[in-house]
Length: 133
Image (cartoon, rainbow, N blue to C red; front, side, top):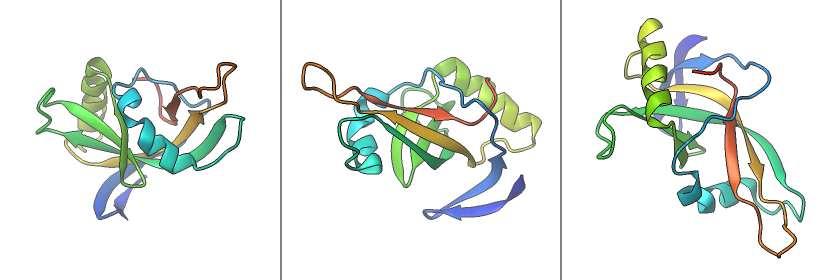
């Protein structure tokens, strides 16, 4: 859906209509953003979280590791990045829709955090409601 959406002081140019099932992309950095995930899901007891959010997909041309990076934010917090290959494929998709370099949004699900037998919790991850790249 085309249009301008204001999300946490960011303007999104496009909303990717949800598809089913959500796809679990091999994102990078999720491990480093576990504290953001914990803030987003709150206390969900011993069972794992399964919560739906709106994700913001942000082309990050000034990223020091990859000038083609696509950052994924939820409620103003970064939760990961597309891996290098998926970022390039996603940018081609943006170009096809004449949205090069623009911020877009899609539905997302955060899962994980269940209590494990050793007393630790599993890591959280995010799945996106967009077609595979």
